[in-house]
Image (spheres, rainbow, N blue to C red):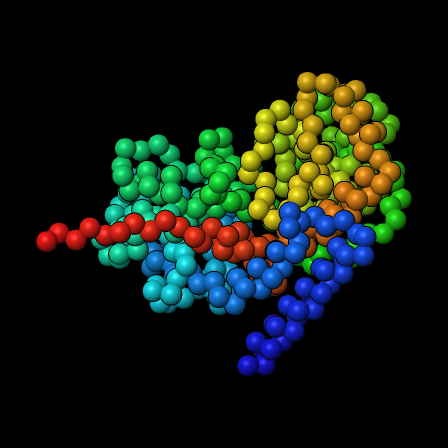
Length: 349
């Protein structure tokens, strides 16, 4: 009882903190702040998920999937009574479509819930997506069930109206204090990761003293310092997106370089991404990028930076989930998808 009371108190305190942060003239990062917070509280009080027993022990090799799965297993939202469930979780590790066919066929044979919606009130984890198949079971899983995938998702493996993505694990620790006034040293900062060499556009900025383009990854202390002293942090979609939550938290506005539409940003049901990050194509080259950044200044820049700092709290991963963190905001997105079509079962006379 004491634990529940403490959790409720902390939740209300955090709600007040978030509300104050985005009130009094400060910009809000949310698509609808007035509806999100009361809906979130309702979700936490009423949402129930039934987890099908897996056929074998599941070991996710991708840390974000593993953390989400373990958090779900221990969450108060999980129920052992499928009759009260809003959604159903289908647990499986990466496997062939033939194996997936057997997984869904087993669920369909042992439980009545799949056939009520043809899998539309079910969800699963997969960073690789579900491949093409002639199997009815796999087709329904891919077409109807909610896929929780990694960001960015593989091409053609993400369906925007139903699927959601996991935020990167870069904020799997305590959120830093909100930055106030920035001491700007660089207009733009790009951090190379591993063997990635950066795009042609990024390479064209190497000799510009207003931009810091790292040729080798810096250590964490220097990295955080550079986030704090840069106006914009540059990311090439499909190359390196892991660190953008840290950029948000430290007041560095993300600039995503891409020539294709992005439909799988984390929390697209919740956040107003156009007020948090810039999205720039490569066709205008280096000078075009500079023009975009130079036009994003003054009041607009400060609003984007403030909105990003406010949004960063939702990208924090905790070993034990906390209110409004990455796990619970994923639960909120699932809750928004809980209304599924349920088909009448034909009775043969």
